[in-house]
Length: 257
Image (cartoon, rainbow, N blue to C red; front, top):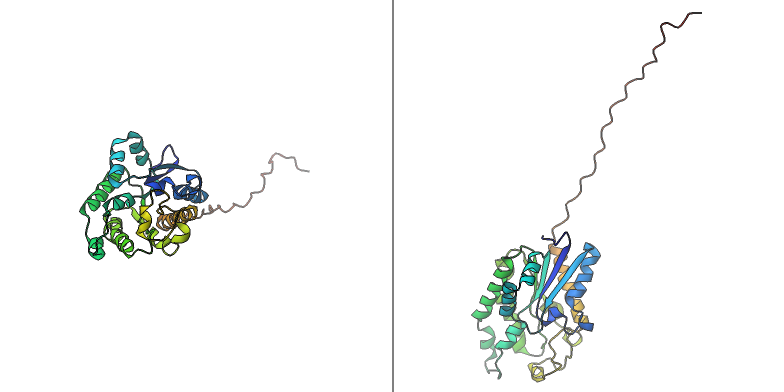
């Protein structure tokens, strides 16, 4: 793993979830994860490049054009990322169709291309491990949302771990499922109707949710880290057998009595 001036570097990339929206004082999963990792790794610097509203193409362009971000990724020891939620929201029709099943299963080739271009851009800069959180469903009472998010994870996000070396998926959808009412900020009805609210939209994790996400990332990082090489026990040096002490030479010229 690459280090910057001998210091390990944790780089967080992505959207408002990575930016910490919903967390207390905007302290999100990346900051909580940083604290967890420091307990084991000691000195570890965090660079959080999470931006609310960020999409996959915008993140790729920022990496390709921004010299600072370019250099930061090159020096990363590990990368954590949440991305894709805003891209998915942008594909939702204003009026839900009657045949939700057909829409949910319809492949989105542009989404797949954008993901591949992003991964190729990052991989051109670093071989550091990438930990990518999949999409979670903040609308558990919506069958359409559950089907759509499950499809996106299964078809587009999860296969990235097989196609790109060193990419690991963090299954946030499984981690938060069943706890939405307590881990989603401004949770109301759990249906897509809540998206009509222009403010306090129940999409982001609250502080408890961010801490759960941090622990999920931490668990995958720990399970995929290479084991530390065992130190060979120091062999005791074989001491040479002491030669019998010779009696001191008597002085041949000592006078006899």
